[in-house]
Image (tube, rainbow, N blue to C red):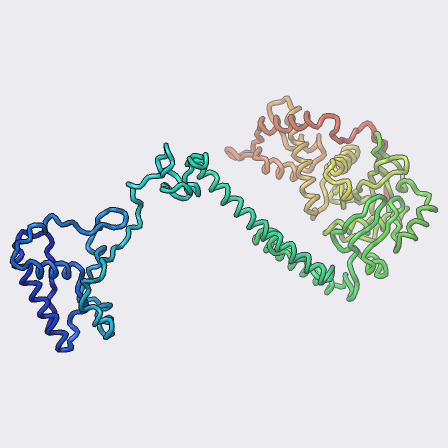
Length: 521
């Protein structure tokens, strides 16, 4: 038998007889269903019970107060917004059917008139309530997380604060909590690193996680893999023997230098890991005791050869590879520790070495050098160039390059460095060519600029001039011709830097050169 949906009429205009008859009919149906053990109805709703009770008390009296009767109030003093707040459940609900299966619950649901009415609370604010603090408008909260308050414990005015100040303090507390969490995390990682170092010492790589970003760490791992692959290639080629170690550090005068690349020193020296080198004669030794005894007997205070340039404390010596073979070989082995593309070690006789030094009361200390062939068919003015690591980024590299082009001017030739250049060498040469071209443009007073004239005046190869002009965006192709543009902004920028350097700028003075081109070999 299908269930009939019972409708509850609250405040209708009909008399109480209709309500009473419907209530009686529902009670009869409920009793017949309960006697027949057919669970058709689950439980009576509070609204239907209230109507049933009132109809039994006054069955023949017209219910005039139905229209005036208001629904029950919530604890906040507001009427429920919908009949769901009265907990009126549908008789077709699955939950009610499951409840009727329990006999105890079914028996207790027969008469619910004696139970108090349940009322559901609103989760919204009751705006009729006010803060007891005099002069407070109940806005804000001491925690800074709520818009209103109704007690002294959350009153900003009671605590001599404003609502905005509470919000600011709340945000400050959150920041402090985040900072403390970060600090705790860093302390935890520091403890892990310290425990790892105590457990393994220097036998394992330090923990690198959480020190930098994942992207940088991944780049470092790729660089490690690439370096390992290069070392493996050197080992296969025989440049690194099995069981030998690269020289990691050298003691050179007052400096202890970390090496960058492998150098083919004899195996008994290479596997030591640390080398001791005399800064004047460049002899290499195994221990500091041997170095100390050598320094007590070494009479050299400057490189061998002729001093061809001196200005202030800076000097340049010309060393012939044929006359001073041992010194030049030691210089090449030392340079290979900091150069990647150098392949010349022992065949030094066809080369001239120009060694730059800085003098003090103890002697002339090695700053850098460059080598050039005695007879170069391609007019290379530099075969290999190096600035020692302790003198890098001080302007000595440009001085060496400028000195090599000064020799080319004296020889009345156009020079260029031998390729391939190292990474640092390429940066230094590009910077030098840019400076030379901008200086030429600054001093140029004519209307037409010729690359050939620039090459003849500066001794720079035209190919290098063109590549530098292209990088500066000063060379344009227009109507079948290449035009050189004079960019005044670049010239002004160079001039400002030149003025800022002032007297600290290290340059080569052509008048201090005392040199004639060598004849033959």
